[in-house]
Length: 298
Length: 272
Image (cartoon, rainbow over all chains, first blue to last red; front, side, top):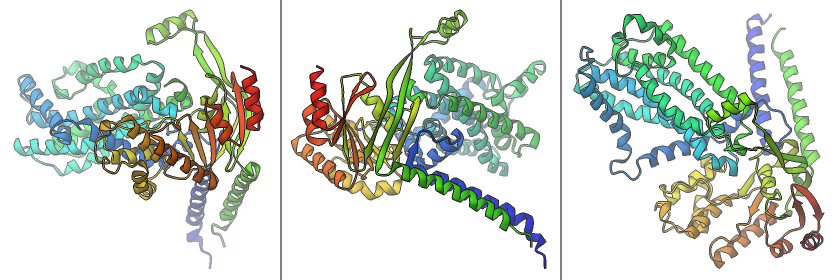
């Protein structure tokens, strides 16, 4: 009897199996370093990052533990910080945007994304400029600092959900099951931030001025993104401009499940995915071009 | 019978080809753990410092960016065998540190080929990457991870690190409270906790007090017995003479002489 049913799948999985074996073999031979061996940059970096995964955990741990180490409340500041900003924003802006129901929840959910993006990209860039000395002395995967900056902010984001839930309880804002969508939103903003972090670290190593310049751009960017005001307060005539602000898509991925209480539609989701992957591709492209120069310049 | 057997065969042959490639590299290396072949390292130095975007843009328009290249290493070749202590001597700026960085994979050579077999433990800067606010214990794990070890590997050697550094009383205190001697002792203990295939030593034998220095020397001997190759850089010619099996003299990025310690050191001394 012919085993027709097995045919396409068997060969597919066999090929897949041997492809994995092939790369494993290629990766396991890494106890011999040969500078002339041409392994694709991306593949090599993925291998190195996998080998140094404990380093990423340690860097994230270091960043979280040392941030508020000397302060009395310690890690609690991770949660108190956005809460404080939210209270200030609410007092200052509830006057202007007072018609928005549940304004504190709106601000806080937007701030989560904004903090994630601005802090992870700045931290990645700073550690490349100021911590670059380490890259000159010992070998590390070059993307370690960017990756650990994203990791740190993912942990911070999860911790910041605690004050968000508190505010929702206090203001009696309804909880929605759609909040379970948040891991997808976090993944999307991680892709975008990682791409931006890689791009900025590449530039900042060549031009240290970028660090200062970026802070100004961030301030402007924040006010151009619907975080402290809802899109609806934008004059109808200019609202189409939001299309050109890539961050607006990611902010929406947080506003929709938390504030509006529904899961984003495909039309709301795919631009974020495309922009996130695109940014990662562009960032990695420039980063990998300059990867060998970091030790010379940083 | 149509199943995956044909694609399986094809993939298998791919695997064997790759195996042969790896085996051939191993046979090619033979007893050597480091092989440097015609390596050149080039630094690109802008003639004037261009630090800002504005300046860069202006210079780019004026086509005024001149980049001077400078060869830190030029056509350097040598090999180091398993268990050998290989010394590097030369004046400041001769390219010794650059050469160490090439072996440690920090710099990729501009020309030539570097083959390094096994784990490289760099004793370049002890305690690089220590965080002052973290405790000794936390810094041991952080520094170990910077050297590429996994959690499991660090768990295995943790107690031996604490014992060797003699810091068990202070291990849970933030490292900013340590003296510089304690700092270096901890750095040395972490960097040498695992027996590496290659150890890079750059003028650091002056760690701690005399008893600790003796312990360091003991550890080096122990490494040597287990087959670790040591790449040793020092300005102290006497220590090079007493420790090394072979010595290379670098000058302006080129190898001037290579061979028995006595011969090379005499030649080096004569040139001064």
